[in-house]
Each structure stands twice: as structure tokens, then as C-alpha cells.
Length: 202
Ligand SMILES: [Zn+2]
Image (cartoon, rainbow, N blue to C red; front, side, top):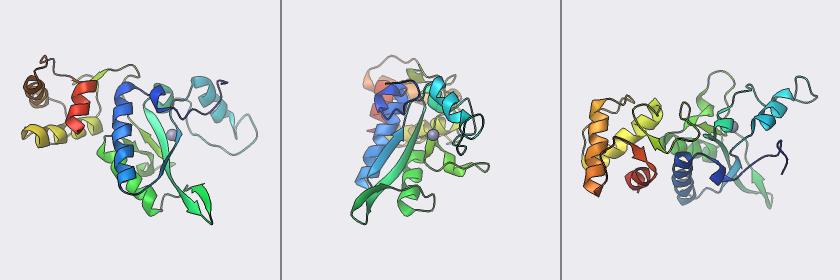
């Protein structure tokens, strides 16, 4: 597969991002929607190639940035697909009710929705910004406000942690993470790794 090819493989994403995406896709399907994962990881070569379209190369502009979160393995494009006139069709419409439902479910799992951007909104685009592509856990030093909110909500529901859902990972959040980890018999390292995240969202 060439470097400029489109990749739809979920397993090419960051490990934590995969968990969040798979949970969201489960919920999207349970809502009766057939989601199409359009693109996951994007090599820098492909990002540069896309950026050249409508600039140094012919065509319409398809991206606004050379530093996409797709290259950081923490972004995915998802649209609904359904039969239109007997043919399975991807729906690229931000006003579509299934698109809106996908956006709301993805946000629940900590994804920032491109649909909410004021400049160049991108409704199929979802990302987790500010987290390293090789991250194996979320922690006070490796998170963003949306991910922190999602974790705070989960801790409140799992162990009645009573944390303010403010997206700020302070001492109380770390304490609650440790309380939750201790409950599973795990080391109290203040981190939400793969197993913790799976369990928190189960
Ligand atoms: Zn995207």
C-alpha cells in the first residue's frame, strides 16, 4: 500500500483511541445506524499530498492543515451509510439526523467533533488532541479537557467519586482514579491505561 493511500484500519490508531472509538461505534450501531469509518491514521506523506490538492496540485482543497491529528493516530472520520434508491450510500451531510447522532455519541467518548469548529467545520472528523500517539494511558500530564471530563463522569458513575466534571485533572481526579484502581486490585499509579479505560466504560 502506497504512502498516499487512505487507511481505514482502526488498529492503526493509538491504543486508547481505539478503545474509545470501538465503544462509540458499538453505541452508534445499537442506535440503528450503520457507521462507515472513512479514514483513521494518515501518514505525513499522505497529509502533505492532500494539502497540495487545490494548492500546488489541481483540484479542490480537501484539508486546511499540514499538521493533522490523523498523523498523530488520534483522529478518525466517520459518516453514516444507508440505502438510498437501493444503493448503500455514505451520507456527507452535517444536518443529517444520523450524522448528528454520531457526533453526539463520539463526543460522549471524549472526541472533539470537527462539526463544532467555527472556521471550516468538518462534520465527519473526530479527534483527541494533545495526547501522544504512543500514549498507553491518560493521566494528569497526558490528557485534554474532553478526555478528562469523560473520565471524571465515568468515575462519578462507577464509584460515586463526586468529582466536579470540569475537565481539569487535579488531585481529586488522581485520587479517584487510584481509588478505582485499588478496587480492582491494581497498582495506584494515578493513570487510566488500556484495562482501566475498558473497565471504566464497561
Ligand atoms: Zn479527519
